[in-house]
Amino acid sequence: SESGRPAGKIIAFLSAKGGCGATTLACHVARELSRLNQSVLLADFDINAGMVGFLMKSVSPYSITDALNNVHRLDASYWKALVSNGIPGLEVISAPTAVAAKQQPKPEDIRQVLAFARTRYQCTVADAGRGIRESTMTVIESADETCLVTTPEIPALHQTRQIIQRLLDGGYKQERLRLIVNRVPKRSGTRPEELREILGIPLFASLPEAYTELHEAYSQGQLLPPGSVLGECMERLARKLAGADPVKAKRRALF
Image (cartoon, rainbow, N blue to C red; front, side, top):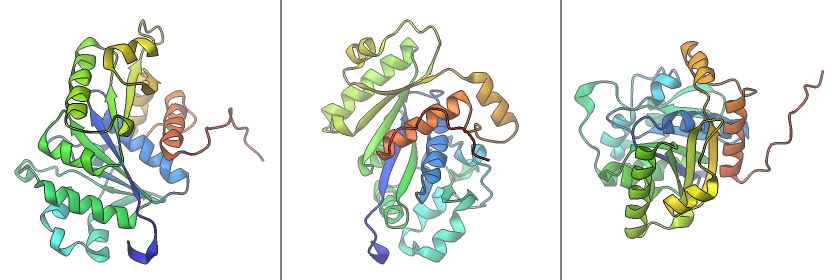
């Protein structure tokens, strides 16, 4: 890789079905990884319905489609024009907003863009979209690990089980899968060991239902404040994915 740096890591986020919150997790985890002093790229490969640009208030007129259509000219200066940057250490490349841009990307172009990202960032967080399509498969096959995001509802768990089965049957290694159950209500009837029985792989993380917190943050055009309940869960998740030490109990401000 350029400048002799070790190649960066790629973490993909895959939603079991629409509305599981994988994009919200990807955005917050990317921010938390950048706060761990990593150089991070947040890339939206959900060509049809990507929301990363909206949530991150991305200002670049370009999108991941421009990168995918121009892999032959991917270099530092071209790339710099494509990404947008609002948080130190974190760069964002969004999905296209125009409906016209929705032609499906070629697998080899996805692989090349991700390989290029590895040379430039310590960590790339890739929103792979939802379900199992050719493009999502290419993203997760190129990634070091895949966070499969679901919710405790029966239809979502059903989809999750099918996806896990398909991945494992196709030779995807279980140790590269990170099962995350999002929006777990306070009084959830399902225990982690039951989920493991239902889904066949261990639970990596579960995150609480925090609709009001998220709604307030998003209506102000911001991500969650780091000190909020869900914000702290996101920080713990990012640290676990990065292999960093767990967060100490509530830090007190030093004046």
